[in-house]
Image (cartoon, rainbow, N blue to C red; front, side):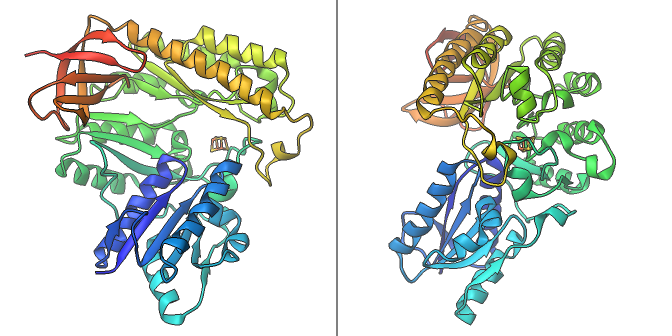
Length: 434
Ligand code: SF4
């Protein structure tokens, strides 16, 4: 039986797509093995969001050729889309596919073998208008299944390469989304995480605004066996009153939003070409908190954007502290060739970016612990995912707090009521309620 191995860089969407491609190889009789093992085909699903992810992508391409010099190497994803020439010149690369045509990956790899020639399949993604469906039954590593419903982005934030790598907004037809959600339910998944590159624009290319995303959440919540629905990430202004009100009444909807802030300073937001002010962002957060008092709000922040002064950073720091997120993902700015921000004046020194990152990471840890503290002594329903030690399981509450609990019975993929007893620096300790 031929063997295929995957290495995936970047976001959850890439992970979803790698799992989908693995499924295609399995259907054609391949065994999927770990990347460190000797395989006949290596697939590197690349990312180009930062310099580091591009460097790592190249490193893994070379590593695949070292593990088995006779193997076929296929390079796919955002970096392949943007730098097809550069990648095709790397020794040992047999197939290059961008962010389209991944459903044909097995054919393309086998063609490259038969014809003894390199195949480069990278088209103009900016003119793409339909969502590429890759037959797939979900991300299987955990009890949560990621379900991709949307592709592309039209926002062109000044630092972001994604609109060039993924093309314009394309939505997956609702019936196809529901079909996959039902399959996931029948496989035993209890939680579905709706994901996409710009999820809040789901349905906009069909002429529908937030209505279709709300409709998707509603329809999935009607599926028997699905107990939870979560959104992966959504922009502040897409959380309209109507949308939030519609989600609030759905019992299965998880009270957790990941809302990228990027900067808490209006002048930096403007240079980033983000389409909101901090006042608008705060107004949305306040509305959500009124509707869902237990909500967890996590966010992304970029530090050291070109020209970010000490004063601008302090404004961001204060805004984040006042808003009180339950977790921050902090990214030091990394210029991407081809984006406006890459040529902006006054780059921030690496040491300054590191210092600002550290300050925000420290703040994040404090905010996370403070958020969890509010729930001590209360009960919560936890979906347990992993066994972390003998008789110890780890899972998540609907509002995305990590809970660890002890049990003699297997809690994997079970929804269990616990009382929250203690708050460590990383998680809550729960005790099962009979
Ligand atoms: S909204 Fe901005 S940051 Fe997000 S994918 Fe689109 S361009 Fe990139």
